[in-house]
Length: 427
Image 1 (spheres, rainbow, N blue to C red):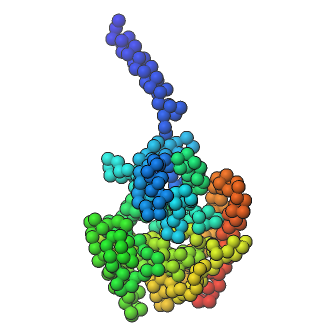
Image 2: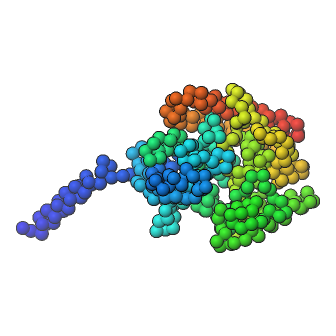
Image 3: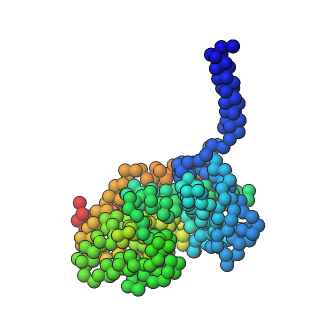
């Protein structure tokens, strides 16, 4: 047998062997992995299966340990692709929306660190919100869409149908967590600290207090390397400059001033009363770089688009004034709004910039067809809602009504912005 014949037979044998291996690892026999685009895709429904041992279930049903991380496993899948079973730790999240595991809780989930120190697909954490404070179920989707369209660093969102130990728990919104991974993707410089504001606390002179997990501002990231709040104190010092001109100029030193004012404009267009620029002074992160310069990151956007949780009357919209020192929230009256926002609207150069940003936000809502996008999102989640509320027609009807009202809110807000611009002679 000549060498060429031997070579051909060996080649044929290898090809046959590779063909057999190909059959063994074909899609019918192997899992196709997910991508980040699958996890944060608002046009798809991600199936999320959370499996918890008995000890973890008991802990998450005990109010004393609601916020203590417990072990479990997680599997995510969509369109035949799957993550496979992942080791995770999870705890419950929320304040006024904090519920036990056997109710309708929201979750913070941490992935087990891999060899690179990161978790799954580079993510360290997932945040699954149960949407209990959003009757429409589409406010977070629409809000973060508008923030991102305006160039404000904000979360991506996706949908999740959650199963816990095999039981269908219905619709959740999967919100990208503003952690160090988020910051690394959106900023070219190095993150020093990520601060999370505490409700009703503000940039008062003595509010750079406490340690990482205490005080008026909690440190989500950076304490290990920089165990102090000196950068926050510097921000507070500038924020409390009594002279308006030097205050406004000083903001350039310690903040991305343009982005800060733009974020306030988006919050107010959305009617986000549970924000920093609203009367709750709540739901935001402050990210500092190693030069001590801060960027504002929005959060907690479920109670937006005029959501009035105090009333379920069809068309009953809660209105946050577009420009005011004080404002109501559904359960309290005449509360002072965030200090930086109030200082801004009371100093003409800053107020003018804020009004110009409102004009840009209003135009952007039309440019990206925000209402149409929210309508498309409502269609994606409708099959899950129909099952989830099969025995609760009143809640399903409320969701439909709130979806329609929220989409209609956009045009009404645009009319209000136009009138405000006319009042202040902004062209």
